[in-house]
Length: 89
Image 1 (cartoon, one colour):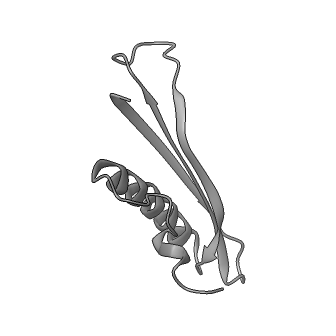
Image 2 (image 1 turned 180 degrees about the vertical axis):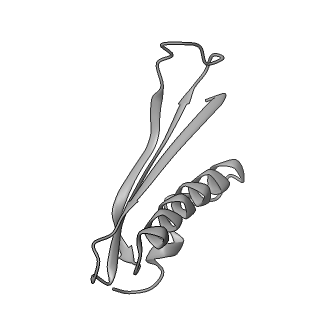
Image 3 (image 1 turned 60 degrees about the horizontal axis):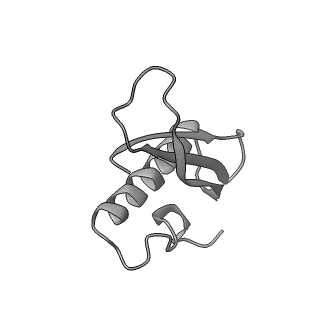
């Protein structure tokens, strides 16, 4: 893919010790124009430790940035566990 775009979202319920995270990375081969068709490269979602809405957004963005970094650097296993999941819940 020549062009990439990504989005993320985090969710938190007050009083919980975990937060929900989700992200998508999409790509296309041609210069993006109106009504461009994008292909999903990776979609991820899950729960990780987190105690606020801000923390859930940061964790979700962190996952997306980590995946992009691994793909750009030809990481041998770009799908290895992402940083927020390094701690056990």
